[in-house]
Length: 336
Image (cartoon, rainbow, N blue to C red; front, side, top):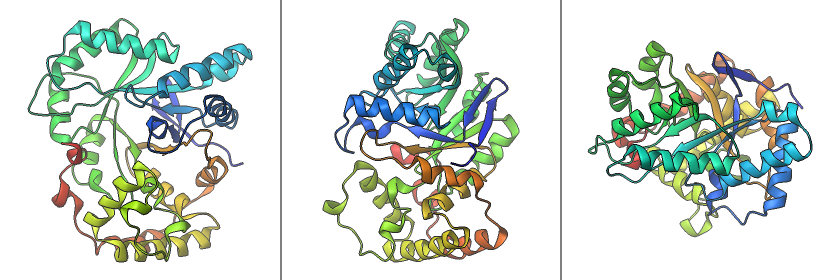
């Protein structure tokens, strides 16, 4: 297996550049067996894939992470325990957010994860009309000062709101947004702003829920009934807005050509393309724990180097697509 690529998210927080995404344990991706899931998490950790991304709304994700930590403790793997990072999200319903409400939810996450301090707490807010998100960030900052949160990040916030957050003197280290060959909206206004303030991007949706794979090359357009996971249903909608199935097939053809040149998979090309973008700290790839895993294939990304010809070939197709920034708006606007 290739040497794991890491990066400093901050001076004292080193992460694997491919993060293990736990959204898929929340439902709609197959039944999760607890023991199989923990065993697979141990394998990921042993092979250097030790950065985990979850949320309070991802079903059993935080509890699985806590049980995984406990299993490492039982095995007296203190060295391994010190290497793993657990990033979670706080995704409250809109409405008044008192300090006691915020504290309650964060303490629930701490309990489930079996940690005293959350490495990175990523905050998501559904409704920008409700400016209580600034109150929530104030409460989260208090918890950070108390040592319950190491760093604060955001999830699916747009650039306009992040400017307001920075203006209110909140220290944010990252924003988790959709970023892929198909959806390059972060480049428009977010990345230039993030360069100025040293904020990093954690990218999800980079593989379009599995559409960026050989499986869909030269295949007929799937109906909704053909799509077996919630992720595939979500990203098929994105493909439709972007330019449709025929143009997507042209993109897969190009990616297949490039993958053969580099002796790797289409998924590897799609991942490396985003990892090479400015301000991107890591790409989150979903793990269907106990059901399927792609650790060995994912590790090939770390040896892969795309050249100018590869990038140019990709842009010959993406230049024909609709402008998603114009069609949807800035990052995260698809959720509002």
